[in-house]
Length: 407
Image 1: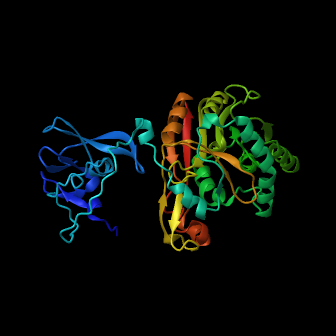
Image 2 (image 1 turned 90 degrees about the vertical axis):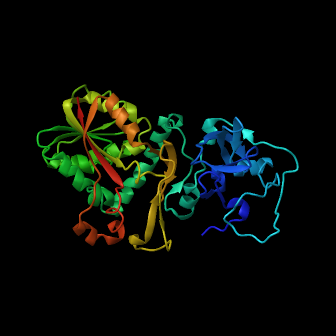
Image 3 (image 1 turned 45 degrees about the vertical axis):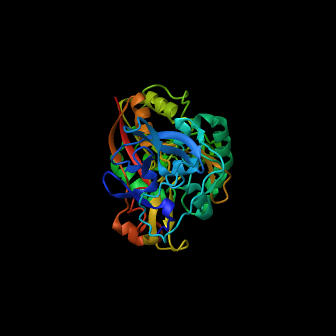
């Protein structure tokens, strides 16, 4: 419930006779009437006053001039009550006589700003995320062209050894992390189908678990990653198991060691979120893929899995996911890179992008999206993993898989 004073309550429109929020009406000094935005549609005036970045601007046919909403007119000292026009009706009952008049000491206006400035909104999610999240955010979201590729490489080189140790302790070195095991990979394998005798590129192979499984299923596999410790580990594992997989230390943005039209299938599993120039990566993947070849890749869901989204739950420490009230995603259209860390990792660059940004980049690289899968765990898997999955991964998609065809 919101308690309001008469100034900031609802007022009655003289035209439709309905009560509206005070910011949705203007006062015409000539007719002495209040008119709402439903009866006279306003435009947006970019202006900074108090903690606001715009005012509603109403064109008045009676005056043949503009009037502003009651909040901005109050700031300027031109509210009807400040002009001692008392015949406007608020829905808040007051004792009479009641004249809480105030006026600014001098005539004033807000600061004129650009439309772009007026449409910027404060990140209201970030303080909550910082307060309650297990993931630490070290920077604000910045345009990805301001993130240096060399810096992302150096950070992954530094942290990849820690990742390998985490996988080893969690016995995940050959299965992927728990999200891959329970949510992503079952849907990924169903989408891939039979891979026997296919030449497959594992783009961003990490510790190589997916490359090894592809080889076990009969594919001829090359794994690529820009982390040298990961590639070194993959080669060590290959020397033990001898599956025939090959591994190359290279960036997805520059696959110069691989010839054009080399692969039937490219698979990339939760990688693009860490790639600084995904458009160039798509172009390179298209180049090394045969015509009519498939590019199947998974990523964080651009809406529900994005780094800037959070779960709001009461109580904060509840282990029951049904007590999550809702997921909050704010400023979806603001894309870019952000430095994050969790566990004992040093900060890494990760990237939030929109669905349309990925779609346009795929089209430009010569791909057609054949299918999109939002993986959801089965009820049986949820039953065995209630803390992680129940009323969470079956409530909204955290990941997305794209099945793309090179034209």
